[in-house]
Length: 608
Ligand code: ADP
Image (spheres, protein in one colour):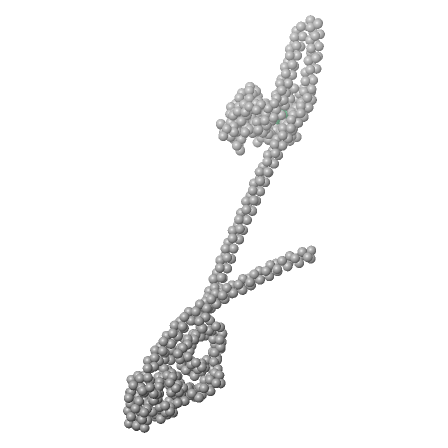
């Protein structure tokens, strides 16, 4: 008992667990799928950003190259100026210097550069476009500058740096000045390229331009300028100090950290200022100058699209789940209905089966009953036969005794020649025999097998015929006869002779009963009642006491004196009516007399 109880209570718990696990696994799978989709969306968005970034970088690089190439030729052209050559050949000629200074000033203004100046082979500036200003380069020693140094060594120089005198950044072009195959000095042009930053600041991403060492010298974000992409080596630091390329700037690292390397030199990185938000970093090198453009794209849009796709994927899965649940619910309901219908059908079939079984049982019972009834009738007839035999013996004994005596007497009377007396005796004998014949005739009728022939008998006509047979007696005994017909055309299904026989019998009994009465009223009612033919014979006789009523229909029951009644009339009548499927009953009449009621099937009904 305990085990089975534990088992039954454990089962729902286990089912609950299984269900919970299933849901958890389903949720995990859904989240995993949504994450995959989000990741895919994120990557797709990054790809898009990368393409856009690459385009931007190409554009920025092109515009930078464009700008710089414009000035590339400028230093070289200065050796074409005779005064420049002459000044380098005669450094003490102040008039010539003034001439060159003003030429450089004009050239600088026209070309849009920042400064143009001429350096001799010792590295001292001989003339400069800014000769008028307080920060005039004239007389400055600039040989330490890498571009000047390179140019003096015969290598045309290009260099970005912060001016030591002006403190202004710019790109320096330097080119040797040759005359008749001999270098006389170096021409330098400084160009301000910071104006590019203004264009960059208008773009979506952040742009920075770093030199070969990783020092950022141009940036759309002012704070990033003169910071480094990575920490500088001590050697690089020393070199920068010597060249004073970035003058007094601190050159601290931006603290860039790689998060993930992507295709095409792109990477997801974080910066020290916001170490938790990665950005897309793309680099494009400007090969001839060993510079690197870096383009940083904000990943906010990629994150937003990933988030949206994640939510959308979850939503779609939830919708799918709802659809599946809905379909399952529908299927279950349909199955439930089908089961219900099947159950109802089965129970109906069972009921039908039951009914037909019951029907056959009922029919069998009816058959049995009919057989029992007919057996009973037979048994009743046998019993009646016994009674009848006794009655017969009693009835026949007396005339037989009389017959013997009278025939003996007739013999004696003939022997004695008293023929008249003998003749009288024989006549009495003949009467006795006739009476005995009548008796046996009645018996034969009683014993006769039921005649099955039935026709539609007009009841009123049968009553009239029966009345005709007792008419003499009715007249003689001054009986008041009344025929009360409610339905004139009642047709009973029976045999007219036998119905008349029953009626005559009932009339005679009524007349017998009323014989001693002063008032004699015989009434016959004919009507249709409850779908049957009804004939009532009522008299104004003494009526039937209860103790007699119980035996009325028994054969040989009579209250009439010997020789007057046989006690077979009602028994035969009742049998006849019953054989026609009807009923004969006795009841008390309204005025205290007796009333016999014949009920018979209607012929109209049968034919209909
Ligand atoms: P019988 O007429 O030979 O006596 P029945 O079977 O016809 O035999 O009648 C049986 C008895 O029923 C009668 O003896 C009588 O006592 C009683 N009986 C019949 N008809 C009436 C009646 N109309 N009024 C009173 N008693 C009747």
